Image (cartoon, rainbow, N blue to C red; front, side):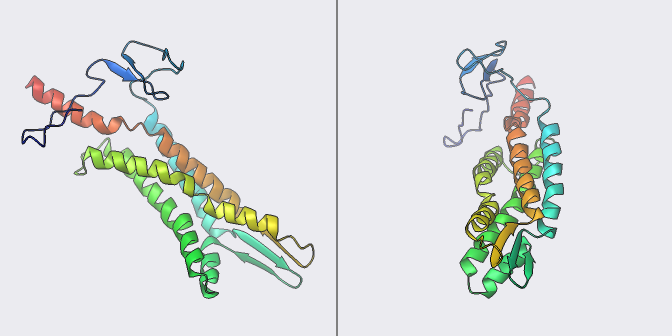
Length: 219
């Protein structure tokens, strides 16, 4: 893309696709449009993924369905000599805050509730925005996509906490901590949302602007 905003003139948008160029999605090397396979890494070249949005929504729905039981079922099962306590993600964070661990409770809530919900919203918004008009600029949507890709690795913090506690606290009949059924659903939800974000072809964000520029030139 060539920008001319700083000079006071209108912004000119030129896409690689309009120039007959396709970039490898694995190694990013550019090739002529009619090239089938990347000569550098052997990856199949494709200007646009025609099934991108179908996969995005399929993974998104599966992730949303798994996220519901992840918050309903217990995440942690604590067994002592006389009682068994089960806690969900939210109730566990509330209990930590009740015992004075406000920082840890805030981190768990942020990583296990705020981030997953924000990722659901962001991926859905990106998928819808490439098909419907939006006032948000392409640059901001591209930035949103990159943020979603970046924070995906931090979504498993709750699973890491459960795994560490389960490994450390095993005192036979005195006390033990084991993961609850919510741990499986939460892990699946994170995996599906990551797959949904990865299935999104971010090049579609720029297609609408490229088409508008092309129609202007035709006029």
